[in-house]
Amino acid sequence: MLDRTIDILSDLIAFPTVSSDSNLEMIAYLATQLEAAGAKVDVFLDETGLKANLFGTLGPEVDGGILLSGHCDVVPVTDQPWSTDPFKLVQDKGRLYGRGACDMKGFIAATIAMAPVFARKVRDRPLHFAFTYDEETGCIGAGHLAETLTDRGIRPNVCIIGEPTEMKIVEGHKGCYEYTTHFHGLEGHGSDPDQGVNAVEYAVRYVMRMLELKNELRGKAPLSSRFEPPWTTINVGALNGGQVHNVIAPKAHIEWEMRPVQTSDADFVKQSLQRYCDNVLLPEMRRVFPEAAIETQTMGEVDGLVPVDDNAARQIVAELTGVNGAGLVPFGTEAGIFQKMGMDVVICGPGSIAQAHKADEYLSCDQLMACLNMLEKLSDRNAAPF
Picture (cartoon, rainbow, N blue to C red):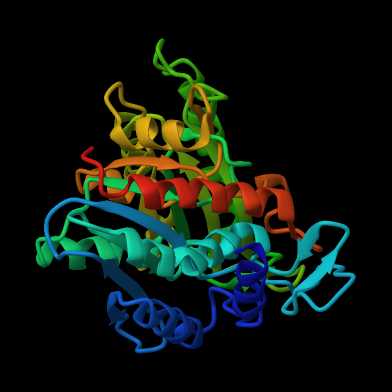
């Protein structure tokens, strides 16, 4: 089974499914593999027609069942010093190199390799597969898939997301809210600053207010928080604006994110920034240029995975892997979207997040074998009640 999985992984890596590009060829490949195993497969295109989610089911079309979930997209390889072709699998000394090998085509390959086994053993409860687009850019595909499944009345009981956790069980992570804030000022000559509205300067002041809020959030950490750090964080990823030394910058934009441990923190940050714009920045800008504006574009607001006491997914995966206990991770996934639908969710997959997004990304054969062992036990257990 390992050799078959590696062959599938080689095929998947060959699809250059960077988030900015189409994933349709990979989705078609996955659909063909699942249909050959006897699954009922639906493919849902996005509004552009260039990307799609896949949802497949083995077994009866009834409520419940287990969902195995993964995302198709990968991060870019531009300007990364790869030793080999990133879109061609290279096997060397027990490691499988290639973009997406770890994050997270290895898990997807394992589920596809196991599909015929699942098909032979499935009984009165369904086993589902969900493969999504644009996880790396705000979990957009999973959000759309959740809407589709809800509209169709489909809701599995349990979801296992195969993000790389070294096959450890993860039951929680913070949310990830991403924004771009645009500043529209008035161009002018740098020698007469009072006759213009410098968008870069106001963007800098906005960032300074965010840094104040960043410090205030440290005091808002819930006493019961198990996250590290235990408070909501803010990060300014980029500030862009202006063109040359002697021109007042008419436009600027900030790319930023926050990782809330509770939704009240996100509300606090957004409301505080809006008040600062309405009461301080915009009045100053509009005294010189009435059309001045500050606009925040929501790139994505992905809920975190909230640890809960009663979690059937955690219990099942613990039985399958023999792992005791469950932890938290700092990175985000699609898990909160499925949890919000009412599923019990855990994250457990092969590989280390330390290898993700880097040049020479790899997945060890040992980790892939451990994943296959878990899925083999899942196939034996699938008919049992849960």
